[in-house]
Length: 330
Ligand code: PMP
View 1: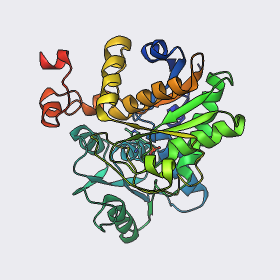
View 2: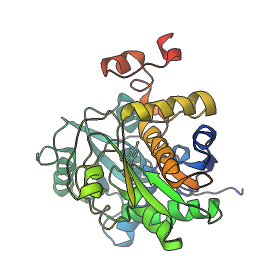
View 3: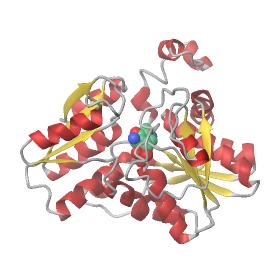
View 4: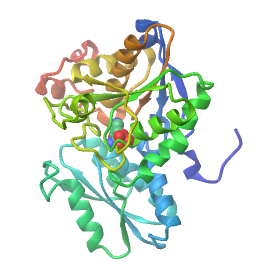
């Protein structure tokens, strides 16, 4: 590979890896798209770059301007990196329940961090509404609006889906991932369907989200809860509108964590819980489609972002979740 002088060109073009454990467990070939390999260590770098480039092309942001966003953290990290490289400020609004590591990372990147109490979407204090208000009140600022701004899913239609198609030599039977904004599932789904209508697109929904019921029976209704950060949607966002969902699974934190632990111990991958939920979904999809099928999913972010939570015995115990033996011994 030749040298590049554009740091933003480091976003995307991530590796795709065949996951041994999930493949052997199902007799399928299950592949993980290594989104933790992006500069901000998550899939959200792609949406951040696409949203800012789109705002520039449409003349919405001026030199020295400010980007405001409400985020579970990863989009904020992506936006802060993109903004730094392009000479903008960032103001990031985040629920105070997100991991300490994400807050520290955002501060380290120079973003102005505004923490708000976790609240339902109907509450005006919700992080999304707070970020929109701050953008309106700040001079020369734009609101990234990742949930309803479809520049988000375009990053996956034109980037992630194209890459997966090429990396799998155009031979893919199924794709699954979970949804936060829905940009990844809708964008990759639309992109892959444009190549081959027969690719099965499945949603892997955590407990506490409403999309499983929506795609199952048309009703937005949530049951239970999850500690997974960045996923678990309660409404049809602008990015989810028209998403080509063929199947849906509901995945528990325990089922996702089992794969997080196996991928760490057996394959040397340190990942967050949304990745574990995605791999659990890929295993379910493989069992539905049958042996010999080729399935892809998303490894959304690095586990180093959750050392104080998913990889901390005290935290796991407090949440009533099983503690892996090597953490219990530490
Ligand atoms: N996993 C993690 C860790 C995330 O931060 C996000 C983004 N919120 C997602 C998955 C879901 O991505 P999307 O917003 O594209 O649905």
